[in-house]
Amino acid sequence: MAWFRKSGKKTPGASEEDLWTVCPSCKAHIYKQEWEAELKVCPKCNYHARISCTERRDLLIDAGTWREYAGHVTTSDPLVFSDAKGPYKEKAAAAKAKTGLKESVLTGDGKLGGIPVSMAIMDFRFLGGSLASGTGEKITLTAEHAARHRWPFIIFSASGGARMHEGIISLMQMAKTCAAIARLNELKVPYISVLTDPTTGGVSASFAMMGDINIAEPRALIGFAGRRVIEETIKQKLPDDFQTAEYLLEHGFIDHIVSRKDMKEYLHRVLQYGKRR
Amino acid sequence: MALDFEKPLEEIENRISELKKLNEKADVSFDTEISALERKLRSTSKRVYSKLSPWETVQIARHAERPLLRDYIAGLCTEFLELHGDRCFGDDQGIIGGFATLRQHRVMVIGHQKGRSVEEKIEANFGMASPDGYRKAMRLMHLAAKYKLPIVSFIDTPGAYPGLEAEARGQAEAIARNLTEMSLLPVPVIVVVTGEGGSGGAIGIGVGNVVLMLSNAVYSVISPEGCASILWRDGSKAPEAAAALKITADSLAEQGIIDEIIPEPEGGAHRDPNAAIESTGDAIVKHLRRLKKMSAKRLIDHRYDKFSKIGRFKSRK
Image 1 (tube, rainbow over the protein chains, first blue to last red):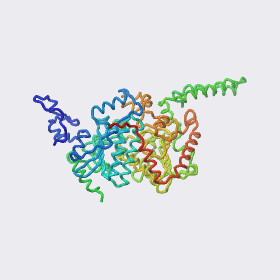
Image 2: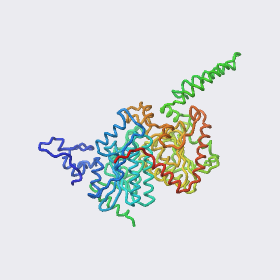
Image 3: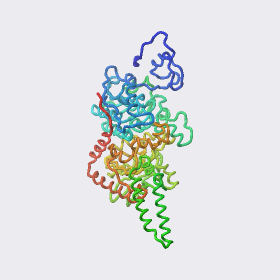
Image 4: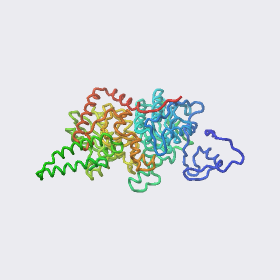
């Protein structure tokens, strides 16, 4: 599958690191070609590694149909925030340089198996996929765009939660995005939420949990509070499967667990039921 | 119980009360000394409280004697019919609510309750609500919508409860649902941050047409301690984090997050709870009168516009 753009050309006598990838979860050594053919899913433990928003878009959207929307929105520094590791401004600039993105979410529309959809795809590489002003604005604008066109809206979440560096304004994005989802509901526009590794904190406690259907990738970490915080609060060890996609399925908070390679087909099947009729 | 920065005041207060005792026993009068000390107390107190650091404000917002929701209800409502249970699992005590007559206005009151005595605190989980609390609040808000009652929501929580059971029963889902459904409520929603506005646990009942805040309350995306331990890798840097996060009422008003600051008596609401409660009542009623004139559709649009406007970002082609 050619969904993943290869970086650099293979040269004869490539080093070990060029040939092998270590699974971030089970630490198994996987032949890089296989890793990429498997869409960065570990063939040994089925861990679905974090992928970029563009990789994900290319897996889902029909070639040549993607149009970015609200792509002009980028970070500002409302609090002139600085912590032990330096100013937020510098961190944001580094994230932009590293990812080529302007915010932690890619938004736009395109066709999924021929069906027009609006989409927001979060990218964990951009400051941990954190929810801030720009993220909330992009998701809200795209939801409103979907509402105007009556296109189904799909969000892929990948986030550690609200971005502390923008303070209370980040918290307010939870209410802002949920209000936009509420409008979609009023208009009977389908909204599907896909939770990927990780979806925690303020993102889990806002739009990510509010899908008409919520689905997740296998073994994704999904939860409200951090594991360490909970363990410190209740003074006990948590079960190993705590806050996994499987745990949430068992507890009734997601509808289905869908593997990366089946995602497009699954979404397509679901969207058939949400067609306007 | 004096906070660290209140120690100079406590010292003067102690000396005044000692002199007053002596005054009663001895033949000599200490009146001049007493009034001098009282003048000093006033000026010191003005100095201390007029330039509180954000971290000192956090201490006042968390003060053990600060008025709690049940004090506001007792002070402002001639009737309170508490309603119980989320109809799913239980009756969380971290959030309480019910029908209330607040200065002659029939309303639905909901809010966090931290608890005063040790028993109450444990029962209320120190105001850290569980999913059942958020679901109870939403149930009562839907009931308010049905009966066309305005909603007054009091925020005072360190945060939503981070526990195993809370996660298992869907803390994230409960808060998310409240955010979504509160945005469509066809009745006025007045939110008052009375003490601590702790993150998702606060906004979970915080989607209002107006958001009011007491002058020494704080409202934050994360606790200063939590932020310090993540971004400074050192929980003791909480004072720095409190300053950087800009969580005080003044800062929040500047950021356009809150609509009005309710002034507290000098030194904080705990110094004169009745005065703080009365000012809060005045502010609530003022906004209630205004919002009651708005149609259901106007209220919903007003709330949507209020929140959709929040954000500070740049535009780059």
